[in-house]
Amino acid sequence: MTSAADKPSHLDAGLAHLADVVDQRRDAFKAGQADPKTSYTALLFSKGDDGILKKIGEEATEAVMAAKDARNSNLAPEQQKLLVGEMADLWFHCLIALSQFNLRPEDVINELDRRLGTSGIEEKAARKAVGKE
Image (cartoon, rainbow, N blue to C red; front, side, top):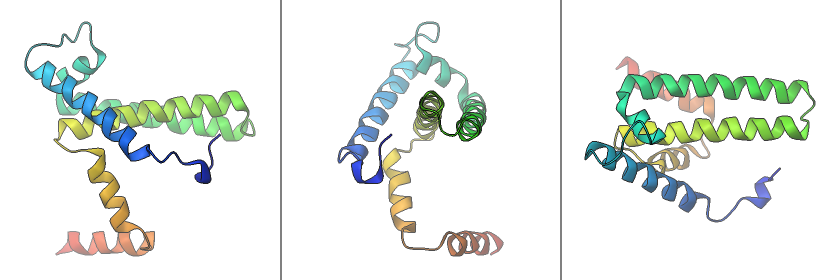
């Protein structure tokens, strides 16, 4: 599997390209140019917020189960491949949700960049403090 040192330099561009495709398909669905019977992406958008978010929950559960299976099998290559596939499914469905709410992966990357160098414990405490105000 890929290490951090092997991170593709085009990672952000790849996510942006996938988001562009999702946005184009969302727009085609909204314009009546994509049929939910023949396009999985159109089918997802046809289910609205609740259907899209429910699908993320399902995919997250499948990713968790694949991770547990990978760990229990001492990271056998076939289990690693299954885990990567489930994570790809989860990321895809997250791109659908971002598009549904007129957001982009760049928004998520910017937020992660903002958090870089901040303790996760401190960052979570700051979010809780803002919520109490």
